[in-house]
Image 1 (tube, helix red, strand yellow):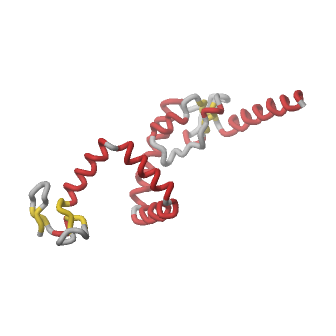
Image 2 (cartoon, one colour):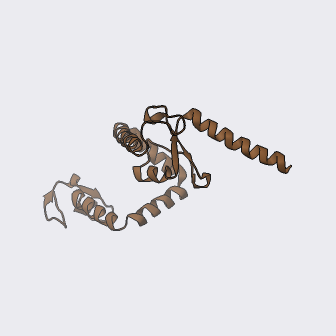
Image 3 (cartoon, one colour):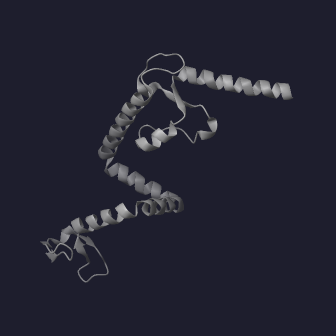
Length: 172
């Protein structure tokens, strides 16, 4: 048993994180108090924490990949449930924003069938990932887009390609 230095409660040793530098190899605060303190720090330093995390991932790509793989293996159901909830919420939000039909042909499809065509190609950065993107990021991505079915999307790109090709023929 050990007394927490923060809340003052006496708790079993397994309620404390390990700390090799202390006499009993346990942290002075219980896990609950440590988590509260960490959440408080993160709330005021979220941008720094994200920046540091991105830097660590960039500097340690293999370790980051392995850490992610282990987490997924140990928490598969949790990850899939979170992804499913995010996916469903994103589909609901996209349906509310764009409606149920293709901008070009007017046909109605399930939301997952649509693609998002950037009217200004310079604003496009990568491809969408409905399963793991938070709505704020996805909403920013589809800003300035039209929702179209895959056939209409390919037709639009084909027309853009032909316009560029004709311009080359005229100038060449």
